[in-house]
Image (cartoon, rainbow, N blue to C red; front, side, top):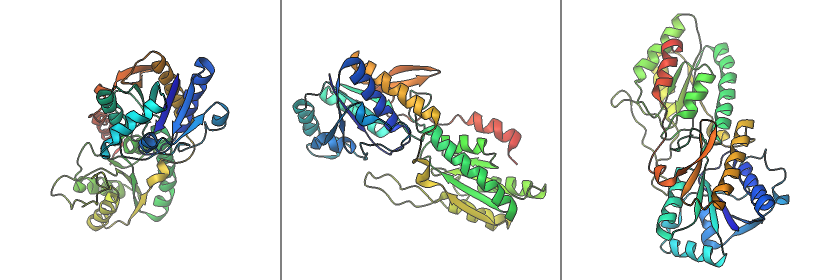
Length: 344
């Protein structure tokens, strides 16, 4: 078979491991030919690709990012985008297309399967861990480890200067990174998009710690967290080319309010894109490898329109139609149970 592969949306650790596994199994087990499209769907429409083989993938397992490059957007953003995809698949004689991406890329894959009968298989990746249908996506655990390491380091400087440190992590609609890194790092408070926060309650928790002799606090806030209406000013975000708000900066507002209301010095740390970069953890390398192998199995079984996913310890297949349009959010019971014992 001739199989196309692309990586779409934001980069994350583990992408090269997934590509490597696809190439290794497709070539070594099935004698397939693999074309890796450059810059996501743009590469498909413009027929820009690399011929991938086992030798070209050597040494890439620990490397972050994606050797294929990635972009946001889709063929549906172009007047003749669907025709160009159809023409590329036909002229390149592709038997299948493996789409490694997040919610946006997998939605496009599902739509193309519906509209063009495109033979697609999806592979979930995102540091946000917000893809429905799977227990975890690769990239997430690496991002959590990076954020946790930062929080660990911030504890000592916060204690030395009697400060409140407000740490902003990624998480547009789901606060998985904030929740996991906050718990692992022993944060004072964790603020997530799933539950609007009351800045007054946050300040009360910080004050209780201070007056008990704990002279430093770590507040972890996801970039998509928002206050309860009327409790503090909400940010007015600029928009990107897709019309989505360019999140970032909620930590500045939270720190300012904490300092104003409590009198304690508050500093801001925005980890930003450091969470996306660098070497994937062992867990993400293994998960990306398992997903890549399973994607090739799905291709040879003709399981079009599905996504490989982790359920418990097993890699399974989930119809893309059950994934798109949904966001996997944090179970707030996790945070409430921890807060009841540790916060404040």
